[in-house]
Image (cartoon, rainbow over all chains, first blue to last red; front, side, top):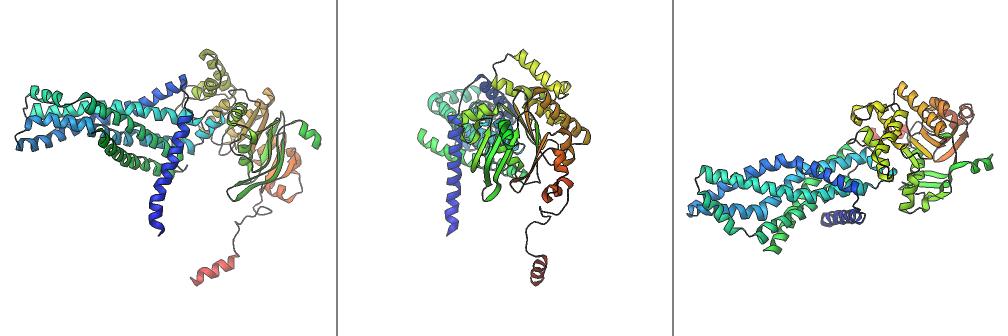
Length: 253
Length: 273
């Protein structure tokens, strides 16, 4: 009967450790000039360098989403409503969720591997020995950077996805552009739909960077250890983002 | 002698015991490091040399006994006081542990930028002087990956010296170096020590080199100091453990074989399976 117990005990223990880690990182937060500079550098590394994948994926998601909805809606003679479906599903769900999962794959893994290797090559020890808190110099900037980068990336994702939608609906299927934009404007509420999505983006950004630094920090200092940690980052981020997304959506609706 | 020792000691370990989990590493170890000199701490792998270093820097706390740096008991320090102590101790880790995303210049500048309010032009001069000491001023704008292992360690040495510490600790500074780099490193350790009048501790197992840079030598085996004195005296010691280590004999008080059952029993058993 040990199996079911460990099945639940391990994730719970892991969550506890991750929470303790997070609280330690936050309790030592100190916003100095160096800290802000390092945070901005991390926003560049995690955010700007994820732009290519976000823009590409955003465009194709917009394209295929419009294709499928337009096809379905025209069967009911409601092809004009395609922009409503596109905008609402993007702003509310797909934008934040997909961006964060892509972010975890592109930036989260590199944060985990970087911190794991810093531990393996004694760089974290070296910081400690120089009386520089690695929590402050390594963990906190990456944590903050995720909270800034993911919402910004969600905006970019949404814009390119809508562009993809325009390309398919307006240019290829000949939907009237005034109807397309008009329907979108009429149906999207700034507060509930757009800002709701941005609140999710902030929460997911926090979640993704928290998990990335946590798994990097606790990675065993070997090649397998770092490999395992990067995998865990992606899996844990994907699962927890979808879980939190459901909870937030339920609260917001 | 003993009295004299303790008066001029920069670092003292008194009756220190330490275990990693269940595995005891140090057993009632007594060690005093004389001030202003280069002390080599030697011993076979796994004898607790690096643990000694980690106890001095407060990365590990002794299970029993005291670790004194000057008059400060490292085990009793609060985190802030420990950081204060660490600014005064330069540590060179085994592979240098330079930050790979920073240039050599920025690596050396890091402790200065963190801990001093000095303006950038002064930091620049200080960093260039430190790099000049280790002969790598020309590599200031290069990244650690562009330099050899020996050079990396010299940059790390410059970084460890950045805040002009009173104590320098070197963890296996010669491991894996070619003869030229090794010669350079050991001269640097000796010269820096003489020029700045600091206390240096070198953790090493390079027996032949010790004579060239160390003023004083401690040999640790199985968690205890088994011999201490000038390197020349150790080389001529009659003690079996000391002789085994200094002459590199495979078997002796430190056994060649990992503890196991008798060989014939093991072989018979495997035949039966």
